[in-house]
Amino acid sequence: MTEQSLAADGVGGGYAATGQPDRPRLRLLHCTLDYAPHAGGGAEHQAQLLVEELSRRGHSVHVVCPRQGREMSGRVGAVNVTRLRNISRRPFQTIASCASLAWFLLRHGGSFDLVHVHLADARTDVAALFCRLRRKPLYVKVGAGGPLGELGGQAVVSRMTRYYGLRHAARVQAISAEIGAQLARLRLNPRRIASIPNGFDPAVFHPVPEPERTAIRRELGLPEDRPIVLYVGRFARAKGLDDFLAVWPRVAATYDAECVLCGFVPYNDPYEIPGGMEHVTVRGWTDHPELLYRAADIFVQPSHVEGMSNALLEAMASGLPVVATTVGAAPQMIDDGISGLLVPAADSPAMADGLARLLGDAALRRSMGRLASDQVHSRYSIAAVADQIEARYVAITSGRRGAAGSPTQHK
Image 1: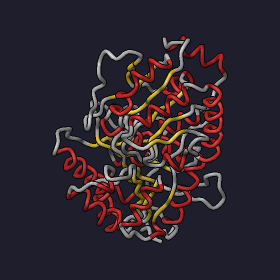
Image 2: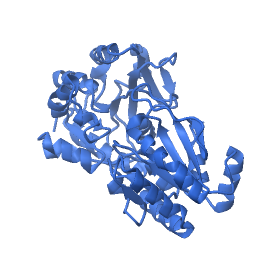
Image 3: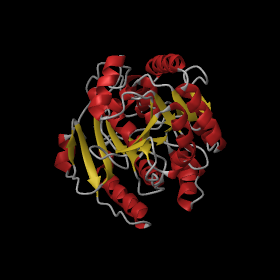
């Protein structure tokens, strides 16, 4: 990405009104592992939602990520995206990603008011070192908690991020109480921990009336005469699909139900869906999962590790009752027995009991789905989430001296 294209993106310019009287127009750099139009994971999806919302508010937002496939740098909607040279082979992938990011920051990082890293990995350490040298604030979002999440890794790189990158961030975003507790155990200054959830687009994810549900099933080629249990997400071992599929044949036979699995196999931790299973439909990833949510009756989330699941959030917003494991933010999102059912992770019998309870009671499904939608729409819209993040941005950049390119002080 050239200096000219950075300038065209608004980087290096002044400030303008955002529609909120005392909010400056900030020059923001967001570091992600991927960006649209690729089908990235949940963290990348959340990054895109936030970036687009901040851009609509008048902030100048630039995204930097590793290059995937043949996708080149350029604008994606209103956002300028720099895709850095990347090596896909491990173990060189992390080294190449960090080196490319360091080079970009040395050349262009001084033009931004704030650096926001999505996922607390080795890129956080690179960004922390740069931000300390240039007196820029660093904002880091932790994507997953528990022993399998970013804060639980035992590799040297993971330990370095915990004890260097995170400690030198102006704010660290915890999207679940589990992550917040882990950050507290690392003895991070509580003032630097921002407890802010993920968000969703209410215009896309919402309940639909029964006739529309039937029409969508017909359009998607799904059964119209039986209840549908839906899973959306990565086909990875950490997602607990084997726990769910171990009990599904018995549940399906008892209630004449269909399971739809929609997702993709990641390069790390892949899980191959067993072939030849009855009452199981496997679909590839879609850019419009809202159609599947509108077609389904129940959503299942059997994960062993999560931060705050996008799919769970979107399913609840769409009016689906859910059966989810007690990992990540699920206990915060779901009132057990009221807006959904919570079961222990890796507990296949409990998963089967939860599914049986919902499949056997259509009135309960409707009641839970309605309450789930009301709850999520009142708490987790992307606009409400962006309000909270934007407020943190303003707080940690408020020491800037007003001139473009002037140093930013930590508060």
